[in-house]
Each structure stands twice: as structure tokens, then as C-alpha cells.
Image 1 (tube, rainbow, N blue to C red):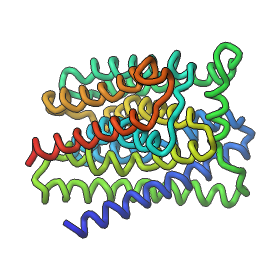
Image 2 (cartoon, helix red, strand yellow; image 1 turned 90 degrees about the vertical axis):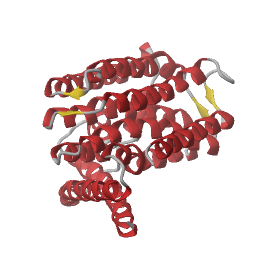
Image 3 (spheres, helix red, strand yellow; image 1 turned 120 degrees about the vertical axis):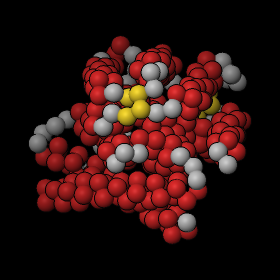
Image 4 (cartoon, rainbow, N blue to C red; image 1 turned 180 degrees about the horizontal axis):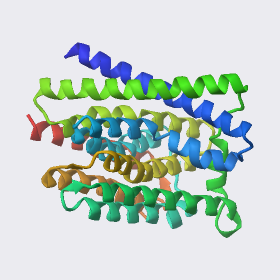
Length: 322
């Protein structure tokens, strides 16, 4: 078991490193082709931050372990809010901007409800997967429109997207990073899924539990790094925006790709528990933003509550599957 944990840790490190290299290389290639920073941030960088979750869930579905695919998507969203956002708020209080309260949070709740409706029959069909991917395309289109019309709201989306674009690279280096990153992304994702399945067997728990816990936490670590980096730059509102964007991608793109490639069924009882808890964490952002404590501010005590709730959820999973 210790060896498997070491392999999983190596897989997480390789996954995060290769995703960053792929984003750096492909962003530089896009620059070479004359693509604007805004469009690069919207597509390459935006999608790239969720590449670990996408590839792990896609490979898990292909390999016949849909529990990891579903658990990774739902568990990553729970970890993003409870663990990542909570921990970031403990380090430094966060600001939830009026634009996020007015646009992104209602959009996230709409996606949560729509995705739940698609999953209510206990299966993620190919139609469901395609519908989720179509929803992702609609969200990207909406974000592009918002970024190009900051006078109708605020300029945070455009600023966030453009600031996330890596520095330019020479063409040869950009090609090298793109290819190396892609190869390592696929290899480390397969390694992670393989080791997680073996670990689930040794622990005597389902693939879903491993997806909700170890895999979800590991694939969410890049969001923690991004959140802490935003706080250090004095742009705490971007940390909240990054988490909401990641949660949208996890529901629409991660589940969408898994369903479109390899449809699967799952236990509706487990879905009701974990989807309900995920929805509760999403609502927590809404409650904090609109009036718990100081409006639009996620302070240290609210962050502590989120982390405590996440620990309680992990304990629930542990004790209910002993």
C-alpha cells in the first residue's frame, strides 16, 4: 500500500507539472499564430487548468472505472470550495466582487441544477456528455462576450484571462513543451488511475470513494497554488473567480468528456449524497457573498468553517465505508 501511495504522489506531481508545461507550450504556439491574449486565456489556459481532471476522468471511464471519473469531478468541486477556498481564506481574507455575485455564482448554480437533472436517472449517457460539452461551449462564448464588453459589467474577466497567459517562448521550445506536456499528461493520468484502482481494492472501498478523496484532492492542488499566488499579488477576488471557473469546467467539461467517450451508470444513492454535499458547498459561496459576515467578503472564520466542513465530509466518507 505504501508503494501505491508513492506512485499516486508521483502521478500527481507529474500531472501538475505536465499540465503547466502543456499550457506554456500551447499558449506560446497560439501567440506565434497571432491569437490574442484574451482568446488564449479563455481557451488554452482556461481549459488547461482543468486538464488533470479531464484526462483522469476520461481515462477512468475508458478503463471501466467510472466511479473515479464521477468522484473526481464531484470531489474536485467539493475540495475546491471546502479545502482550497477555505485554506486560501485562512491565509488571507478574500473579496467576492459584485460581478461574481451578479453573474458567475448564479451561472454556477444554474449549471449545478442542470447537471443534476441529467444525472438523476443514474447514468451519464453519451447524449448527456454531448449536452454538457455544448453547455461548456456556451459558457466559453458567454465569457468571451463579457470580456469584450467590460463597460457593461466590470473588467475582471478580461483581466483574469489575460493575466493568466504565460510569457512568450521561442517556437522550438514551445513545440517541445507542448508535445512533452501532452505525452506526460496522458501517461501520468493512466498511472494515477491504475494505482488508484489498486489502492481501492486493497482498502476495500469503491472506486468512487478513491475518486472523491485522494484523486479529487490531488487534481485540485493546482487550484490551491493559483489561489495562494493571487493572494500574494493582492488580487484575492481572482482566487474566487478561479474556483468558480474550475467548478464550471469540472461539471461541464470533465463529466462531459467522460460521458461522450465512455457512457456509464452509477449508484443513485451515492450520487444523492455527494451531489447534495457539493451543492451545499456551492450554496455556501452564495450565502457568504450575499450576507453572512460582511457582504462580499470571505474572512478567516468563514474559511475555517469551510475547511471544517470539508474535514467532516471526509470523515463521513471514511466511517460510512469502513
